[in-house]
Image (tube, rainbow, N blue to C red; front, side):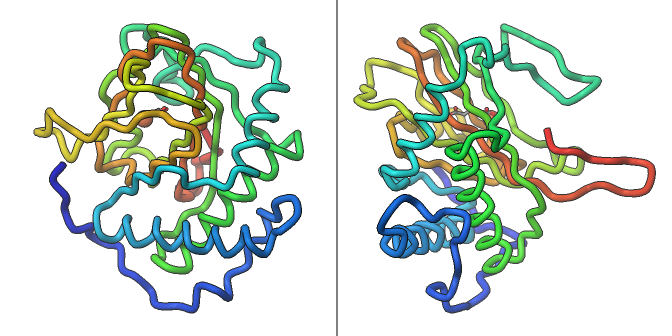
Length: 244
Ligand SMILES: O=C(O)CCC(=O)C(=O)O
Ligand SMILES: [Fe+2]
């Protein structure tokens, strides 16, 4: 994959260890987890500056993945709804483009709160380090049943939407190449090859929403993921901009 230096993001030198991950006090040993999270967040910030994306296998602490999984298991299947394309008035289901089911994480369960706390901490860290001006976070579980896919798309279009950063993580243990369902991240519109990522448990992918077209190849067994977006606040007089 070709890489381009990221425009508009600069590293702000700071002492990382002083950062406080209040939202992610994970079970016991929170001190160790905080150290690991500082390391992870620093890696993400560096990769965003250098490449505009990060692909990090085994990135998330087990405790966080386990609680995401508990949260997801406890949601009734009926809580998953067919995913649509577009926002509000443009919202439509188009099975030719995507065939996953989603369930928004609203913080009504402690495990969901823990995940949203992790995302908030990352948002604050990136704002402190890179001055990204991220304002809010939205996150949902997604389930791709066997045969489901999501065709090549952007998560945001320049000047139109306020999704700035896209992040995906996966819950699938023992996912093999033969299971399909790869996320393919393309460098730009001209890139036909891309970089394929297997949706393996704990892998974290994060990228600039407006810059990288991407797709999910057809899965050959049920594929469980968590998709998250970091947004700017584009509310202005006469136009309220709620999340989603
Ligand atoms: O699940 C993935 O790997 C990516 C999903 C995606 O592109 C999206 O929800 O916009
Ligand atoms: Fe996407």
